[in-house]
Length: 430
Image (cartoon, rainbow, N blue to C red; front, side):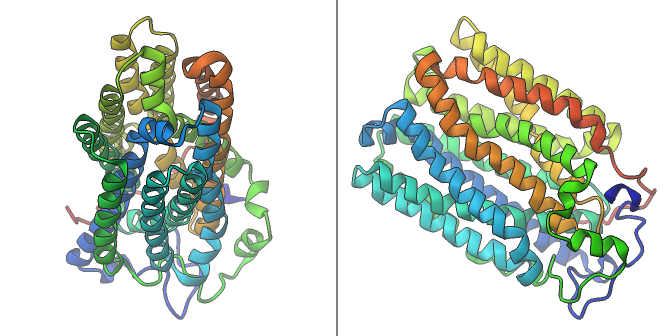
């Protein structure tokens, strides 16, 4: 079982490889850590920027393609289908080729996907929009595995909490992309032009960030040995670990909270509160800003108060915010709820992924497994909320998300760190 292993800070070497999964922290100069962390910051940021560019233009894309709410849910499901394919192969690709390889091709797919959505919008084709979103989703899904395996490895070497701040860069990208979308809506910038510019920015950043990632993070050049490694190697073995299942439930609920906002929030505000698309984009940018604040502050909070208390508080904030958006009598209270929603949902996904990487033996497989649960939420969420929204409105539909956040909160106490962290001086790369 995973719970029998010590934390990464205390773990002795468990295997020797001809090419290490990542360089030993003692051999890394500070400049190398800077570049590694900066590359991951860039990867998360441009992924969020690309996502926000698509989301803030969903009202226009819906109108151009003539899709109903239910049909829009099916179109958005293309993003989740692609993500599931990417996430299903991401862990194996990391183990075989390393994180950098997976991130490189993930970013390539994101650029291709955004460009395809742009051209599909010009062609007024909802089907092609779904195809572009599937490409985008594949890039996000596979790249997410590579980026998070890289992040967990960097976190272990620096001996400080890093993963939430990486996801904070994703949320910062959402925030910046939301503001850009606000401006684009305000000046009636054509959707095709907007998306093609975002694709070009992402492509340029990708060229730089890939060369600054370690070559072999997560690569299993030689198999780990010992009973625990053999247990992890058995197909589906991680799903027989109660702790991994608990992490998956937490990430399922919290990812649904995050993903439902990413998929539907502008339309919720436009249709549910009779706001303009410009105001809906502004509120969505506020959600991304709240997510960024929560994630950048999360490292210090986690180090001070611990995983369990921080995540329980996060779930409570998310539930309060979702309830406010669902039941608020006016847009002002609904907008305040969006801020709480963003703050509360900010830490669930990255902290659960970090928890999956507590045990260095089989870390990539566990990260891949629990991330699959998160993307299951992204897969099921869009069409389900779309179908429910068709009958009860999108504000009524998000009550399902509220319930799932409550379920996640029940399992949070079960994913506390494996053992108390050993006191150690963090590696400085600030």
